[in-house]
Image 1 (cartoon, rainbow, N blue to C red):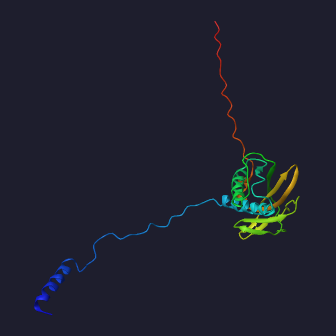
Image 2: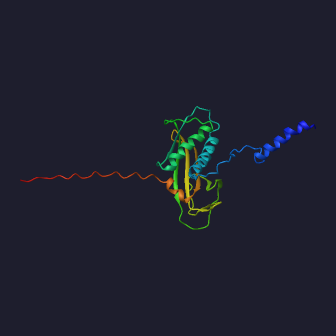
Length: 215
């Protein structure tokens, strides 16, 4: 190396010392936002699990039907509880996903879903067992006319004291083509969602006072 080549190196070294011995630019570093959480209700997810379960059984029974030739009208009752309203929407979606033809208007084929809330007060040991569909959702397949026993069901989180009986009937010409009854265990705290909505009281009109002037 010649003497002439040492001069640029010495100049660079001097600049590095002036800059504080740092060659990186003084720029802010990127930092990810902290992880945020949001509480969500598990009830609607449970309804979707139950709707998917019912749709699976109905579609399995109707797999021999010609596609699109028998449109089905879906009715969920007997009342317009929060569960029945949401369950019908989810059930229709699950049935359409399985290729069944559905109608928004009454047709010759009716898929009727009846729901009944059953709340147990006995503290006896569980007498029935079922299949776990999701956290806090368990189903028991039952024959027609089954009445849930007065005993709580158990899932992974402990004893359940509230059940809902879902009876699905596919009817045509006053005949049952498909009929299944299933019992689902649900969280006790969600029982109000399965009960009929209480209409708001109608406010009474304010009485009008009249005054009579006498001479």
